[in-house]
Image 1 (cartoon, rainbow, N blue to C red):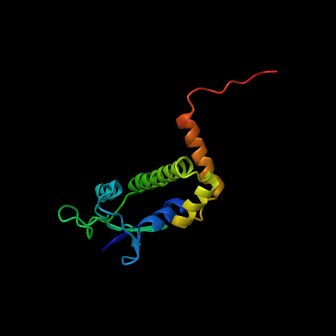
Image 2 (cartoon, rainbow, N blue to C red):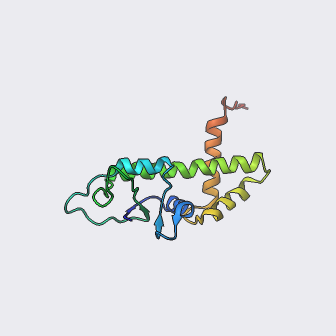
Image 3 (cartoon, rainbow, N blue to C red):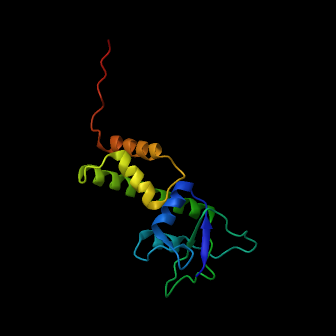
Length: 155
């Protein structure tokens, strides 16, 4: 098994580790059924000669497929590829958080603050505050659901 390190925001790295960490491998391992697995596979390139060793705060195992790119040779993610991957991972986290908050509030009747705390505890997220996660949800909800502008009354 070959691993690669990339740099992403601390709270995103904590979320990914909390969700997909494989203790046997000692790194994050994405299931082959996920889109992120295919994205990583598509972004892999041959490592250029003289390329520095990978550094970052998120280490994950490379996809191993029967045919195609052998991870022994195709084990490099360019800066652009790392940015694309980081954006996708961030989007995964926010999408799951928004879905989790909606479900807990409207189906289970749990308050938003309690749901944010549960989400952070579930994945071991410490790199961002509860208020920041809640504020992101509120901005997303207002952007998505507000149909008309609020009217302001001048006095």
